[in-house]
Length: 255
Image (cartoon, rainbow, N blue to C red; front, side):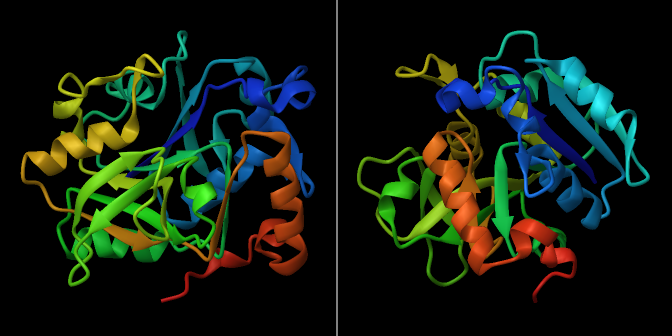
């Protein structure tokens, strides 16, 4: 199992916060935002970290070098930042033959459970497992994706990118695990007409429509995706009620 960590974006919606550096290198409670995803990957005992970089790539490479906490880092350059699925395309050679865990370099999880999610993926022989959190504020779900699933076994039937009307309180995150065969669906994924790029939920939906078993998993007690100055405030308030953000308490997964 490898980790694919996406850190190529600039974060233009953060305004002045990301003018001088990549948003994933912004300091949150004493360390770069990207480091939270790297720590989660190491705790899941991945064999290698494939780190996709683009904007200010040298800043990231100089900071983390060729390994993190004993796990090798392999860098992939995404010269044209055309979204998540394009990052998959750029990483296909580096991930050849390996199943992988996906992490976004601009997210923070409260009480993360990646080891338990990996166990679920392997024991149930899933094609994809999507990490979700319970989010009663449906405005937040509109920022990522929603899912429609079976109440019986959590099998996902529909994934909706940035839904106008979320159907429930399940908020999709960037924390997912994939069989390597997901690359078979890259060319089949439609281009989103609003963003003019291929989106992660549409890639997964192609696998669902082809009959593959995709389920959800409760990946944590809270989730912050850092895209705007308001998101920075949410992260700071979260730290006051859950010290996972500051100290990564989730080192041992809750079962």
